[in-house]
Picture 1 (cartoon, rainbow, N blue to C red):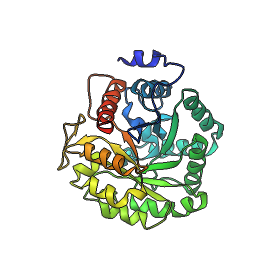
Picture 2: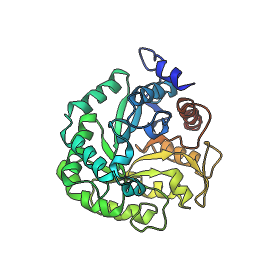
Picture 3: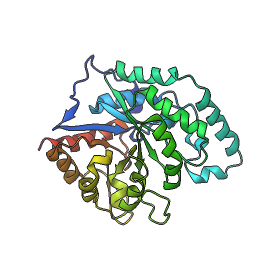
Picture 4: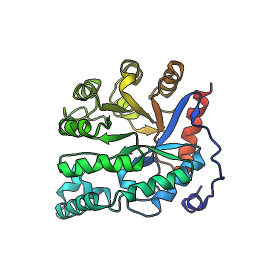
Length: 300
């Protein structure tokens, strides 16, 4: 499916897929739909049509997919902060977040609902460039989107700063891991997750199974130990030893074991496919292929 076909594709009146497959709640991290750059107005219809095409009812939506500025304006990638224009871009992004009416987010939620879809998590990556007012506003935005929690690629030092905000709003933040084993501030190991979980009962985990595997951790063992504090798992395949992303079934991530462990124990851990390995096909086609791989396992 070409991008123009994805944008033009018209879904049926009633989405032809159930909430669960084999008892597992599946979703998608919208990072997977990367045919359109952040800030492009075509991004949202691309995501909606891609989800419907893949038969996936819910998502974790990235802030960069609904905010009208490039990701570089928010300072998540440290390299972007070295740019001479960064302070100006960052302040403009901050002021937009603080002043945009909450109806902006409500209307995005309504677009998903009109398509029979839902936003379950709001993915926004907190860092030290956030002001307290900006952190506070993020929780209001997440509620307006209809999200059940915030998912965040962040660090332990920022988690400490977030404690009073999760307590105030009584709203969960799920920490997302990477596989940076050098920086002790990063979420990359079971111990780093456990440090955050001990800070507040409102902290959860978004376990990225690909990064966890690339860092030579055991995703199934962590799932069995902490399933009650895992909000969702990003399902993607990577090789161990910081290896590359691979199509589902071609890496070392124990995707089958993860899915069957959740299914057989009837745990309410949501499983979100994430397409990141690269392809000449459209994102919608690859997300659909990833979902089909998982669907076969869940129904086995």
